[in-house]
Length: 147
Ligand SMILES: [Cu+2]
Image (cartoon, rainbow, N blue to C red):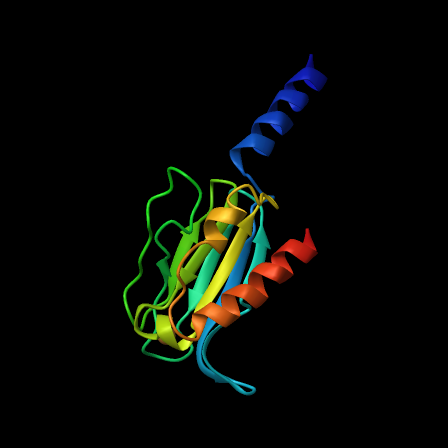
């Protein structure tokens, strides 16, 4: 009887704390090596339930999910300028996001949840402005090659 009780307690604890959920950090930066206005890293792979925390290492940046750049049914998240932000990714797929003031200057990045590339074509079809266009191509190619 005691063994069964222990089993039930262990089982309950396991499901009370989704200890496998991880937090990933992305820096929002004015400059890194030769790049200006960037998210570092620019691609991260997470599992559903994981959190991404964006650190406002430099000021003047934010996080804005790109229209049509997220899985179906996901609302567009947008953070305030100059502040750390965090978001829990619960829906599998690719998430394209940008920094509102620097979108045309190439400040874009991607989160891939559960290695699900089912919305890849939709994300590739976005009209990325200015310098984001070239970077989007490079990053999306990398996502394809990584999976
Ligand atoms: Cu920015």
